Length: 344
Image 1 (tube, rainbow, N blue to C red):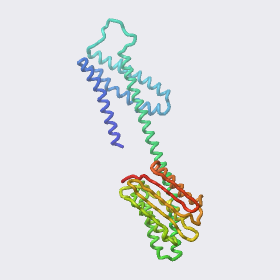
Image 2 (cartoon, rainbow, N blue to C red; image 1 turned 90 degrees about the vertical axis):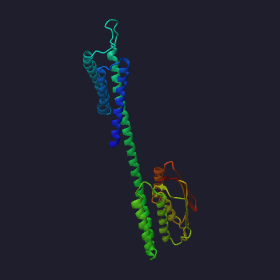
Image 3 (cartoon, helix red, strand yellow; image 1 turned 60 degrees about the vertical axis):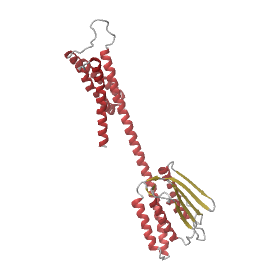
Image 4 (cartoon, one colour; image 1 turned 135 degrees about the vertical axis):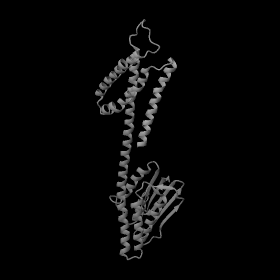
């Protein structure tokens, strides 16, 4: 921030030096001498610009005190031009004579251009200061607005994830409970697997994006845990093809679909059918899940939370960079998701 402010100050100095030197050089080329009052003009002109930019616009115009701003501006310009033209410049002019004076005789113009031209020029510089102040204020408000919108999105996304994580934990604990109840030798392994899953969710999945390899490891650990729970896991398949190195993905995007597949993919005979395919082609991930519709009917009030949340997350995180289709019939439930991933 300090570096940016320093750059802005340097730019202002360079611009004013350039604007001041140009008329001085032109005058010197034309008449061979630079009048003293011209030096004073160049020194005083920034006063017009910065008074409007730093004082009148922020404290009057942007506070919607338009009438007061117009009145104060008129009085300020009047006093500025009187002070510079009638007092300072006349004093310097009388003290130091310089060429190209109007002859004393001859018709006098209706308006004394010696005062009109400087007045118009001072008005122009003053208005430029006001325009610059309005532009700066516009971009400042735009930046604040974007930051607030981004913060709202982060809060909303965190809320969605907080809804998703208890859902995952509840299902996983149910799996371990079933193993413990059956006194299965796989229970200790299930606890270790769950600890790995929780470590990933707590310490790595908080980042905005994670390496795709870690997310795939997380999915495989979850499936391993679920396989320990179900009686018949022969038809639980996962196939991963393609190179995941160098790709990033937002965490916990895919797991909800897999959770629902395990929840509803067991039929009345206790047989589970789940087919998961993940294909990586360049920076595009193709995710496919198919499961049979078992004895558990979908509880839209509770289980639907996960799917609705993941749809909202996809909309936030991958807006125009994803394609999701969900098809179902009396026997099967299918999910097809395509994601365009970023590279590391």
